[in-house]
Image (cartoon, rainbow, N blue to C red; front, side, top):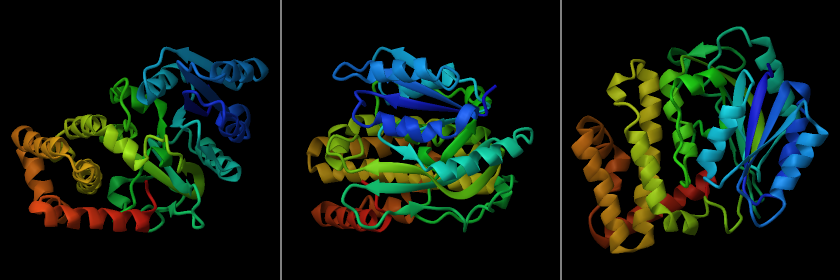
Length: 337
C-alpha cells in the first residue's frame, strides 16, 4: 500500500499539468499519482497522462473517464486510489517539494496512530501579485502532534481548512459516504466540510505545501465566472447545509468551526447574488435563506442573527452597497478571487 495517493483532476490541462505532476513525483515511490483525465477533448491531456503512466508505472496511474466535472474527477481518483492517505491537487496548482518531504516524513512516522486528517498551509500564487498571501494555522493548531478537536484554538476570519490544506485518511472518505455531484463547480467546499463529521483526530504541519494558482480569466474562482455559475455555488451551499444538523456534532469546538465555515460559504453565495445586480439572482439569495429557514430553522436562526447574517440582510440599494464594500475589503485582506 502506498503512503499517499494524490488525485489530479485534469481537463484540457496540457499547458500546465506537467509541472503539477513533476512536483509530486519528488515524493518518490511512497506517492501514488492518479492523473484523472476528465474527458479532455481540446488538447493532449489524455496522452500526457498515458505518457507518465507508461514511463513511471509504479508511481503514476492514468484514469480516463467521460467528462463529469471536477467533483466527479475527484471521486474517480478516490475510487482508484490505494494509498493510506488521500489528497487532491488541481492540475494548474502544484506542491512545494521540500514541504512534501516533511509531510511524507510525518505520515510515515504516524501511519499506525489513527490519524484522520493532516493540515498544512497553502499559498495564493495570484497572477500579478507582489505579495503571496499564505494561509497558516500556528495560532490555532499545535504543530507536529496528533490532537483531538478539544485541543484546537480559535480560527480567525480567513482561516479555513480548504481542500488545499487537507490530507484525509482514505478510508475515512469512504466511510463518511462522500459523494460529489457531477457537472458542478465549487464542490471543493463540500469536500472540505462533509468528512469533518467523521474526523476525530487531526494534526498540523506548519509548511507551505500547496501552491494555489489564481488569476486566469477562465478559472472557476474568477468572480465573473462564479456569478455566471451562481446556481452551482448555491447547489453546493445547500448540500453543505444538509450534511448534518450542527446540533448533532457533539464536540463544541468542531461544531463552531463547521458553523463558521458554512457561514462564510453562505456569505459568498449571497454576495455574488448581490454583485450580479440582477433581480433574478437577488431572488435566489432570498430563496437560499428561506429554504434554510424552512428546513433547518435552528441553523437559520444561528446564521441569520450573527454579524455576517445581519450584514447580508441590510435593506435597499444602500444596504447592498455596504455588502459589496465589505466583500471587496475582505478580498484585499485575504487575497482570494
